Structure formats: structure tokens, C-alpha cells
Length: 566
Image (cartoon, rainbow, N blue to C red; front, side, top):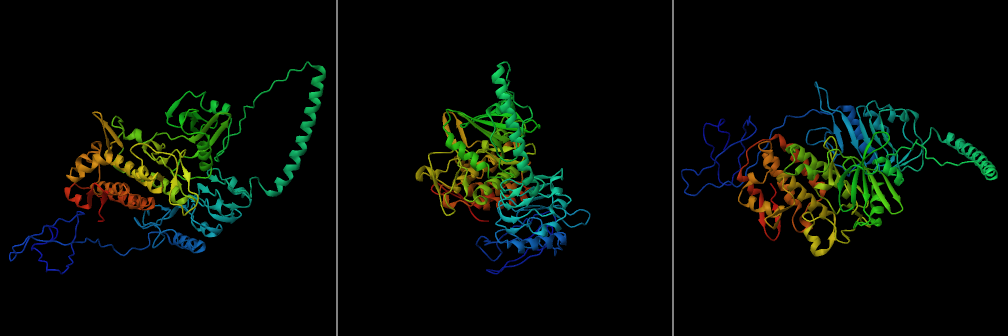
């Protein structure tokens, strides 16, 4: 056994005795043959083999100041629900929810992003964050934090994003924080926070405004009396052109403003069961998508209200953000952030000239998995999307994926609930087969839908194929090809050779693990996230597709496709 360029003589293995062989696989792979000894008439049997890579002892690639700060943070908040072990920035082992810069010119890596949203932090905002001087993004939203906003936050030199939404802050906003022009600051849902320069000034402003209002009211009464007596004054009601800009937090707007935003509903960019979607532009130039509820839609006002209430409290970089909404008479509309690159379904269509590269598909899958993980495990109570599909995964100008359309979402009544029973929902091809027998939709139903999306990313084929009057599900299309080892026809032919064999098999394995007919056999989406990260790491490993990879899978018409552990 060994690399053909390493050993001059064959290695003889003893019966039932393991043997360790050290070699230098300079090309990144090992090729070996096994054959029977001259004394044996039986064919050779290799029970198992393991390959280990020797890794030199690592010095900490993370700057020691950042290591000390993040460890102190872990101790302060008693963080045990995150996988924080070892060095924060080691490649492929980096700490969950942290992002690091690459060490350049022999400099150690630095922590540049900390996403601790809904991480069960309690107490005040610790001063140890001030030691993370390279920090560009800090998300502490939806934790049980309290106290005032620390003065050290605006002093972080590279901080560009600060999310303090949905915690229990009190007091006033530091002036230096308000004056930090390049900072994206989120402070919604902090009822005890003073949104003016100081709480003392606010107390002075209220009676002053009240006095001015009383004076204006008196003048208007006098003006009305004088007008009534003369009966000669023309009263013209005008609408101010100085509209108040939409805030990051979802808020109600009038239908007349919806018409102004969309230029009288001129640019239709999409249509679905909920209604039509129009392109719009706010006064500050921000592009938006306005979804107008059709009065004949299957989804009614109850679903609309549910969606608004959910989106007002849900914030994640891989979920499409709600900017505002309209509820006026029979008109219902939602104003979303605009996603410049449309939806994933459009990019997977065969006639689309811009073919998604393999690594782009993997990143889109990971982005969407992060968004779904937040709905399932970051929201309390957890939320089931119930209609996950490629057309509900949108792409922004940077090709970052975000999950869209929570119109059919339902929150569990309690954390221990295992399912949600509602009227039929979902889309043909993506719908959990167990739902058809039980009538229950749960988190594992979303996992099944996500597995179908992964198969679409691998194959470039739709969930449902209609050819010659017959309908074929993508699982039924893939299964016989794997059984006979025809992997070449499974991978999207438009990818040609630009596809890592290892990561292709890995992604197929993940997809099949998500799609057994029984929900109990499917993994939690958090496990899928971890597997997709590993899949991305394999993109650097190139190779040819081999039918030997079929040994990873077993097939059964009763149990579905279940990959064996490797």
C-alpha cells in the first residue's frame, strides 16, 4: 500500500493486525493497490483504512489581544450554547458566529465580526468588546441585556455595523455614536431608550411643544371664526412634499405613498399567490419591492397581519428585510428591501445565459441554510416557513442569498411543541411527503424542502419535470442515475469541469439526508449548516468523478435515499 513513487517494495499486511505507514503525498492524494500473497488462493480483503494528515504544531493565528477579549466575553456571559473551543480563528475550526481577517505579512488574524444575536446573553454590555479594536460588525440583538449604551462603542475605530435591536437598553444615546457618520446603527425595540440627545432635554421639549401647539390651535380657531364671518376665504388643503423618510423598522404608510414609491404601479417585477410585486424607489434613492395583496388571493388579511407582525421582530442578514407596510381600507401591501439579482429559480433555468458557478451555488445554499437556521433555532418560539422553494430564495447585488415570503409562516405555541397543524400549504415538489399522511407541518418539513433545493442546485433541474405528458419528481429522476453510477448526468452539464468532485458528492449526500420520507430521519438544519461549511472547504479539492463513490449510499424504495456515514 502506498504512493507508487514512494515505495520500491510492496508492503505485506499481517492478518488482523493494523499497520501504520508514513508517506509524503505531495500531490494531495494517495493511490494504492491490494493483491493476494503468493501463498493465498483467496482474493485479498481490506477491512478498512484511515488516512491522517500530519499538522505541525500551530502557534495561535489569532492576535492574543483578541483571544483574551473573546475568552473574557465567554466567561462574562457564561456562553455554553456556542461551539467556542481552541483558537478563535483557526481555519475550518473557527469559532461559531465569529469572522476573522486573514493574517497578512506574518501578522496574526484579527476578529472583525461578532454575531451574538439571540445568544442568551444577560447583564450589561461588557467592556471587553472595547479590546476588539479591529471589530467591524457587532450584533447583540435579541438578548437579555440591560443598562445604558457604553461610551466605548463609538471609539471602536473600524466599527461599521452595530445592532442593538430588541434588548433592554435605557438612558440616552452617546453623542459620539450619533455623530459616527459611517455607522449602521439599529436600536429598535428598546422602549427605555431616549432617542434624543439627553433625557433631560426631552423633558423640556414636551411642555414647549405643548405650549406651541396650544398657541397654534388658538390661532386656527380665530382664523376659522373670521372665515365663517366673511365667507370669502378660500381654504386649500395641501400635502407637504417633505415626507418623513421610512425608518429601518417596519412602519405603516398610506396607499397614496405606495403609488408615489412605485410610480403608480408601473414596473411589475413578480407575481405569486399573494399578489403582484412592483419595483419602487424611496425619496432617498433606496430601491424597494412592494408586494400588493390581491383581494382574490387565497391568503387573506389574517395572513397579512401575521406576516407583518413576524417581520417586524425578525432581523437576520439572510432573511429579506421588511421596510414598511400599508393597511388602508381593503388595500394591503408590504415594502421589502429590493433584491437586485432576482430569485434562485431564475438563475437555475436552462435558458439563463449567466450560469451559476459551483462555489456560488454552495455559498447560496449556505446563506439560505443560515437564514432557515435562524427561523428554526434563533427565534423563540421557532418559526416554520412552510413554503420554502427556489423562487423564495432571493439574491442581492452581491449574490448573497436571503429567504423571502413569510406569508404562510406560523410560530409554535411553545418551545416544546413538535408540529403545527394548518390548512394545506406549500408547493408541489417541495412539500413534505409525511404531511400528506399526517397533515402536520414542522421544522423537518422545511428541511425536506431545503433538500429538494440542494438537488436543484446540483442538477440544474426543477423539482418537478413535465415531459411528454408525464410528471417526474427530481428524487425519482436522480435515484436510478446514482444506482447505476451515472454521476456525470446528475451534475448540471453547464458546470462542465468546474466542479469539485469531493464537494459534489458531499452536497449530494447532504441533499439526500434531508429528503427521507420520514421526518425523524432528517437532520436539524443546524447540522446541515455545519455540513455545508465542510462542503465549501472541499471545493479546493479537485478530482475526477468515480463510481466508487456510490459506496457511500444505500437505496430503498421504502425508506428513501439514505447516505451511509463515511
